[in-house]
Image (cartoon, rainbow, N blue to C red):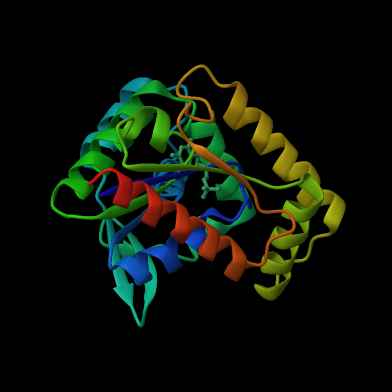
Length: 224
Ligand code: DC
């Protein structure tokens, strides 16, 4: 079974996906973390995003691995744990920029399909899972939430991590990323026609997961 979850940043994808993966014993793939990994790699190696030759070499050699330590997903870039590093504000912005490049997307889609191949049940979250990576996914969700709510959620996360920022800054960063991720030519953020849209603005995480689980059970039951 493949479950695809797409939606803008801070719409509630990751936390719900992790919980559903646990409930149903599925492999969880955070595809955003992969784009973040590529951005970090290019940043650290000083590869200009418009240098497609250098970018191609970087992509040929990149190794991205997911591991779980104490129930928490960890991402490794070329053997190094970069779980925290890829979440910086700088890499967040760069990940959205690097995700507009065609060869980067092609490589990530290939990796995502390969990672999924060896597992029976997989849940993936990102921007193009239901439209491009797995257009035949068994269940597709498209999560949305108001910009105010999303900014509030992201601000809480950042403050917890000790980042100094404020609501307006977080909101404007999210709006910039929404626009960049939705307006790009290559696989823009888009709701798949057959995706179930859920507005998580007024839902607790618990209520959201329950709602999603119900839909999964209904969809998988009716397809048997
Ligand atoms: O989900 P996230 O916020 O960690 O993703 C970081 C960036 O990666 C996001 O702004 C756009 C890009 N991305 C993408 O283009 N396609 C995906 N499937 C996942 C993420």
